[in-house]
Every structure is written in C-alpha cells, then in structure tokens.
Image (cartoon, rainbow, N blue to C red; front, top):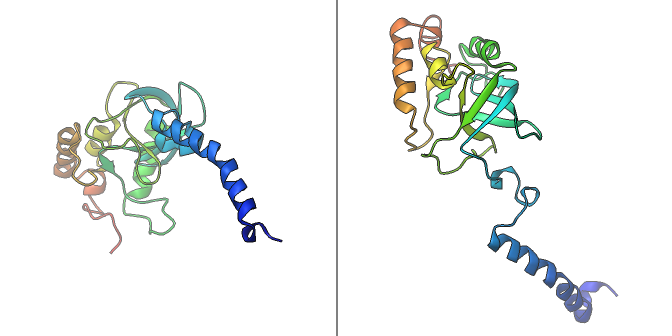
Length: 194
C-alpha cells in the first residue's frame, strides 16, 4: 500500500515535519536565517569593505576577495556600463575589448575598497552581483576614472539617484568632449552593434 493512499501515514508524516517547519518559521521571523538557507542576497554586507580584485570579468564587473575572507564576491560596479565582451547571447560591443583590457591594467590584483550607495534598494542585482563603487588604491572612484577615460558610459538602473551620478556624468562629458575611448573613432558613442 502506498503512503498517499493511507491517511494515517500521511498525517504522521505531516506531524513529523511540523516541528521543523515551526523552527524554520521562527528563524525567519527572528532574522536568524543563515546565508546558506537564503543565498548570498540575504547576507548582510557592510556599507564599506576592503579586498583584492582577483578577476576582472569585464570593464564593469569584477571578482573581489574580501579582507574578511571567504570566496570571492562578484561585484557589479555602480554608475557605469562598459561595452559588452562576455555575454554569450550578445555580440562584442565596439570598444568592449579595449575597455576590458584597460580595466585589467587598472584593477588586476589591486587592493580596493568597495562602497555601497544609500540610494540603492538592494545590495544585489538580479544576477546576485554585489552592487558597489570600487575605490582604487589612490582613493579615486573607478567609475569616475573609467567614464573620464572614455572606457565606460554613465549608467543608472531604473530611477535610482546614485550619490556619485553627477561626478560620473561630468567625467563622461569630459570624455565626450575630448573624443576619448568609446566616444572617438570608430564607435563615436555607439557601442552596440547595429
């Protein structure tokens, strides 16, 4: 006789699960849910933390090993967007390889400080990447430096009002005026293939 046909056995099974369900609910309500249960999105991240860039994915995404230890954290750098180079579903964008090479030169194995933005609703994006500004060893903001060099364009997701938006936009305007990087030939600001 199978278990689903026997109501007594089904009731015993649900009664046995009741204490576990109650414990899980109590942990959730009290906020004592370990990261392994909810994944990295639920883990609290300090507003500012230091680490070392282990891998540059592209011009606006890096893997950072935090000074607190553990596995590297994938970081989506706030306030900028660089031409595509690694998306398997998208062609490589104009100036993408140059922006990626430039990011490698600046960020590979660099000691950095990751800083959040109070305007963010969440510390993570839909791909579970930590959303942070990257402060370089000299104290400069990577997003501003990249926009000023023409390696990235200012980018704000949705209606967020990032605290560094004006600085990044001003840096981009400098690059546009100078025709630097993606604002010069051959892209002239058009980085997505037509």
